[in-house]
Every structure is written in structure tokens, then in C-alpha cells.
Image 1 (cartoon, rainbow, N blue to C red):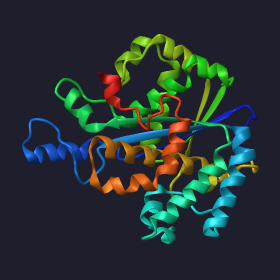
Image 2 (tube, rainbow, N blue to C red):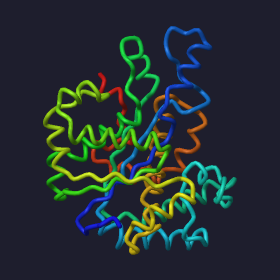
Image 3 (tube, rainbow, N blue to C red):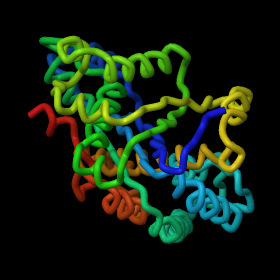
Image 4 (cartoon, rainbow, N blue to C red):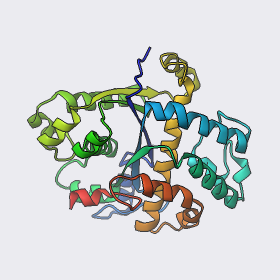
Length: 309
């Protein structure tokens, strides 16, 4: 059994876009280009979003509000929020098919339900084309997923913020990918929490400083994964106190809404993807929520280019 404490914080991580460079490398090779070019058919951005909320707030406010919202709108309190399905009217959301206005109205109501809950967003967006063009010739570019996790940990552990909410323990909840990838991420955290600075400078994708390491290590981190397939979830859920149980996935679903919204905004602003333009107005309630809860700035994204400049 996982021993939750009222003072613990939960960090729900989700992602939008693919964290791999494979498609872009293939596209460059096929075009005989000397540089990497944007893929007009697929996302060129990878966005990770962390939703940080206290265990107490999640248990007492978020679970009940979201389940009631799902019951009222979809007559199903266990339906899975997945933005790509919702905005396209696919999967469990046929009510939004050819009715994007209804989706927007529902998201306005959803944002109204959660606006008084204290939670924080930590989004990181990585422009994969920029990464490849800047670093591919000289060194292997950072893996977007690990890079995003490192930046997220540094930002959360920022001393003023850490002290402002008395942050001591964080339980990270991510969606399981493969056993190898899950173990890689766990080992990545272990290195971050235990290795000396010289080792980290060799292993980590972004320059990392002793002060950042010290701040991160003031926090007690626990890493958990929720399997995608239903048959694998019971072993995880049975370890979670009954007061939360299966409802732990609600946090990851909120992270999905935020990560996908931020990636779509990025691609519309930077890559000018016409396919995303019509989605922006529909996403306006979620965009406003992302802006208001993003501690880094009031825009909807923080591009990797800013860190590499």
C-alpha cells in the first residue's frame, strides 16, 4: 500500500506529440536536405505538462467535481478525457462530432468547476526541428522526454516556490509506456537525486547547476506509473488508498487536456499549421486556464529555443 500523507503533493505528467526524432530524420533523408525541415503532416513539437496539486486538494475537491461534471455531460463518470478524441468527436465523444461549439461550452463549464482549486502547471515544449538543426551536427540532441522532465523538476524545486507551499514530498504519476522506458525514467530520477554534479553534467541533456541539484534534493520524490491497458491497472490501483483508488487517473486526464492544448497553440503560432487554426477558438477556455496556472510566464508555451539561445 502506498502511504499518502495529507501534505504530500501529486505531480501528474502527460505529454502531447511524439518524443522521438525518427520521422524528422527520415523526412530529411528523403528530401536530400542539408538541414531538418518541419513535417507538415505531423506534430513537430513535443509538450510535457506537469499538474502539481496537493493530495488534500485532489482528494477533497478535484475528484468529486470532475466525476460530477462527467456524469452531467456524458452520463458516465468514468469516461476518459482525451483531448484529441474530444475535439474531433471521436471515440467516446460523438456528441462533439460536427459540433465544436458544444465542446467549447462544456470546457467553459469545466474550467468554471476547477477554477477555485489550487493547482499549478509546469509545461515544457520542445521544438524538435530546432533541436536537430542546432545539435545534430556536433552532438546527439537531448531526448525530448528526459529533457522535459529535467526542466520540470528544476522549476518545481525553485526555492521560492518550493518554500511558498512547504513542498516536502512529491508523488509523480505518469502514464506507463514500456517497461524499458519506465525504468529509464526511474533511473534518470535516481541519477538526478544521487549522482555528483560531474556525472550529471556528462549524462544530462541540459546544463545543470549545483544549486538546482540541491533544491531538487530537498524534496522527497516517488515515481509511479499507470498502465495504459486495463488489465495492468488493478495491481496499481490496489496499492492506492480507497479514498482515491482508480480516480487517480483523473489527474493524468487533466494533464492530457493541458499538454495537448499547449502543443496545439505552439504549433499554430510557430509552424502556422492551418489544421490547428480552427481548434484555437474552440480551446479558448483551456488556453485561459493554462495561462493562469503557468508559473513560468503568461504565454501558453516555453520553447526549448529560449533555453538554447
